[in-house]
Length: 155
Ligand SMILES: C[S@@+](CC[C@H](N)C(=O)[O-])C[C@H]1O[C@@H](n2cnc3c(N)ncnc32)[C@H](O)[C@@H]1O
Image (cartoon, rainbow, N blue to C red; front, side, top):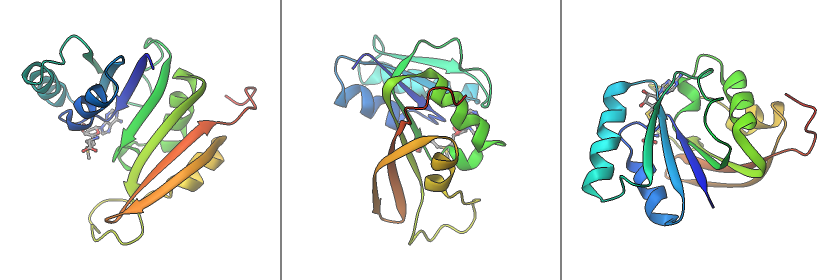
């Protein structure tokens, strides 16, 4: 496990948790908000993870190609924010290594949060040529693990 990209990282709680869980990985937090990325940097310094956590300012879709290939892309509570989730999923696919994993967390069945737009993440993943290989629903959130389908002609 070499590189993990946390898109829509927010303040970096998940970013730093990933760095702790994968002690040999470098984790890149990507967010459209400079203020959020500042909080990621602060959190990683406080947790002594700064040598393995970096930040990248980008507004998806767009802005990811210059990042090196990723073994895992983590997208927690991010997809429903993007103006074009399909294009964002295609872009994430381009940065994943073959056999890399995309982990998506979104509001799921049982969510009581009616204030945010919902996205059917499983359908969106299938429509963009990912194979969903696992889903767990807990406390109103769905965690979905997907792999880019083998048809590499799809871009
Ligand atoms: C609800 S927060 C999720 C934070 C964190 N991943 C979590 O699970 O708690 C969504 C984050 O996505 C960022 N964001 C929203 N639209 C974005 C876009 N198009 N490109 C990059 N980041 C975006 C926001 O700045 C915000 O920090």
